Image (tube, rainbow, N blue to C red; front, side, top):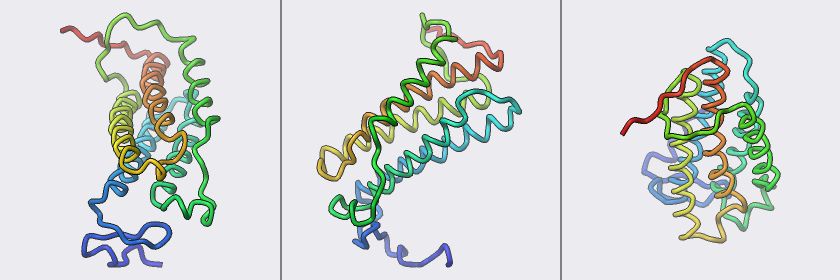
Length: 187
């Protein structure tokens, strides 16, 4: 099968059920943001491999990527067809897993007393980039949910909100494990 189909050459794309929509449609913008976020999560995973250290949490990154694919698949399909295509849900357990991971990382981190600059190791900096992309994807999903409340997958906004928190804490945890100092914001 060829990757290029030429069916989108006039600015339209097909949803999972076959409906054609404009590439500028809010739905496409929304799942495009989720796709971009997923790519940045992959960059964190790659940066950790580059650091050549084993840091707890990399298995969570693959879990997150799968959940983001689940979310993207639902956004790429009209809700009346979710059952037909047996598209997986974003579950409350997915959110709990992120929260439990954050709680574990927090046990080792110093409490924050100041804002910190988004830097450190390549892996931690990649977390900060992914965090800001996650916030953008969350804003777009909220916008989509206002326009299409019945088309917004359950738990999806909460998952992205929690994921951005996870990425912030994980960046701090990676820097701690790599011996990188946090840079305090000096206004």
